[in-house]
Image (cartoon, rainbow, N blue to C red):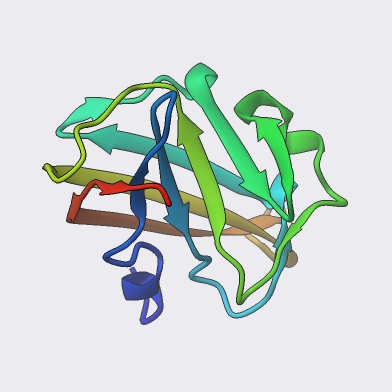
Length: 134
């Protein structure tokens, strides 16, 4: 955990949609990174959401989770929010325990004898009220 973790999920991050819900997030790193450097795990009330059911939205574009690794030209900019979309209905007005593990692989900081990208991992656990998408 780092000093910017508190900004990953804000109080208005959880929104109900017609087909399920969206979780809006911001990066905890001080620089913008391409989606190929990101990984996510999401739990709702302790139940892990299958990554095959995740879609990621940034910059007006939508991608399946399994496309992330190839997206080295699609960036999440530091002041923008990304969106994780899940086709699982949630009740508007109800509070849910959200656990969002957000991993960033920093390509310009190589560590260890194998010179792998630095892993900047963050796990945010927060109770959020599901709001109506407007």
